[in-house]
Amino acid sequence: MAGRVISLKLSCPDLEFKCRAGQYVLLQCLDSSLIEWHPFTVVKVPTENQRYFIVWIRVKGDWTDALEKLLLYTRPNTLNILVDGPFSSPMEGVSWCEVAICVAAGVGITPFVPVLHHMLQNPRSRFPGRVHLIWIVRNESELAWLADLANKTILQLRTANRPDRLHLELYVTKDNVQTKAHTVSIDEKGSLTHVVRDNVTDDEKTILLTPNKRSPYTKAESRNSCDVIKEYPVLGCRVLRGRPYWDRVFGFWVHFYPERHLNLYCCGPKKLVKALRHKCGYTSSTTKTKFTFVHESFS
Image 1: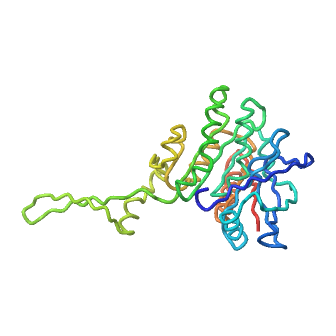
Image 2 (image 1 turned 120 degrees about the vertical axis):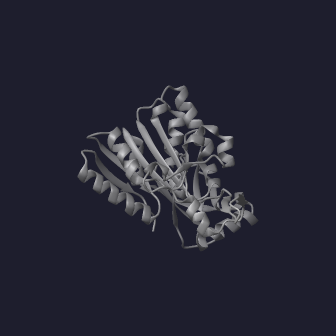
Image 3 (image 1 turned 135 degrees about the vertical axis):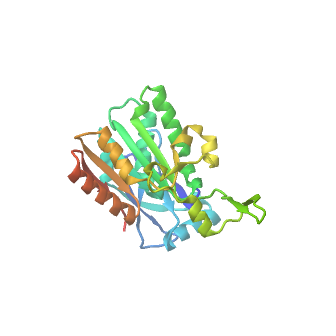
């Protein structure tokens, strides 16, 4: 998939292998290493009718690089992969919350993908009651991982008269849009000259893209320049440029759920985990809305 991410589909004919949303497995590929085991969250859990499961693997490191080469230059059906698990994870709690707040960055979206599958297949189920999902990606192309599933889930919830069950926000941090500089100059005679340049320096680009710090709502601007968004118009209004402005986001949750105890589930880099843990503690101590911070990470 985009961003050098492998979608690996593994068959599990054994009926005793059962997995719940949010759990993870340990994988070992004997063709690449005889001793290494690596954990991956199950993106699509097996069912009685579909005896297979799917994991997403970002190519980063020697083991994943070797696996990518094996999949590209050999027949994938000939590879034998050992599976250990599944194992429990804190992310299992998302499926049993009345209100679940989920924040993911990059491939950290994997624990929350089974929740979308569940809501697509069971739009009127009781749990999870309502899911607030924030997904932060670096490039617009990475939205393709979830675009089709998210689009179908939103439409299915609308058909079931449960459109408020999923609140989705997508943030793209890297700017892929060509920026043009508009320069207005005055010559000696006092006439104005308007020049438009396509090649913009990094300093000029920073000035052009830096939002107004006085207005928190300009921290992320809506852009529909991604081909994925053009293909799925329902997601267009949910794609924002930049990073979430956490003061505004937490303020919305406090206003929407006064005096409630909420669980915030996070899966992402250490910097994001540290920032959200601090915001949960600060918000819990200064407002009547309490947050319990839950995160998952693999060392």
